[in-house]
Amino acid sequence: MNKKLLVLLATGALVLTGCAGNESTKSSEKNNKSEQNDRKKDDNNESKSKENAEIKHDLAAAEKLAHLVAISGNDLKRLNEQTNLLAWITQDKSTKFKSPEGVPLVKVSVQDFVDVVNEFSEKTYSKQDALDLLQSPAFSEVNGKSSAASAFPKDSEIHYFKEDDTLVFVSVERGHNYPQELDKKENWKTEGDSIKIDVLDVMTKTKISTITLKLNNKNYTGGHNKSKYYVAEVKTV
Image (cartoon, rainbow, N blue to C red; front, top):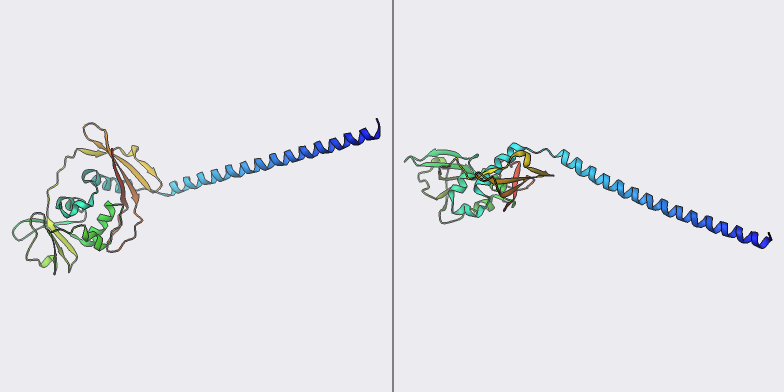
């Protein structure tokens, strides 16, 4: 075999070796990138799992709020015309008493009312925002304390006693049999800081709506004791 042929063969072997080396490097880089992407996905999944594991929901508090919303809804625009809605949403924070004439009345502090409207809505309300929800011809501001009142509301009237920051209105009888109920807890869906709860027709057990509650991280002034959850959405079927 002559020298020229040997030189050509040696050169070809070097070229092939170089190509193989390049292909190996490229393959290695691809594998590294793939491994890095897989690690990122795993890290993201672990992070989400940890977030969900760290959030402990209070199902009893969620059930209490969802039950009230299932019966009345959360349209707070009706507050200025329906004292039965005001009575319903404030029932856990209000006090019943009677006027000197024996008329059953209810009183609730404005601070508690501010907490309640923030609990029932995705919006954030200050004290003034909350009071604005009640504005109507039936709403009256009274200088003085509710404990020293000489005149009391009638029918759908609401009296706001400014000195002790108290709302007073006529008590409304509440029923006990309702056409809707919450789905079983095992069917509730938790997603991070949210809980989704279906509302069912009592008779047919078909879904009427879905209530979404969120952990209450609202910042507002004028309240007294912020609720555990607030109503983020009520979606009817």
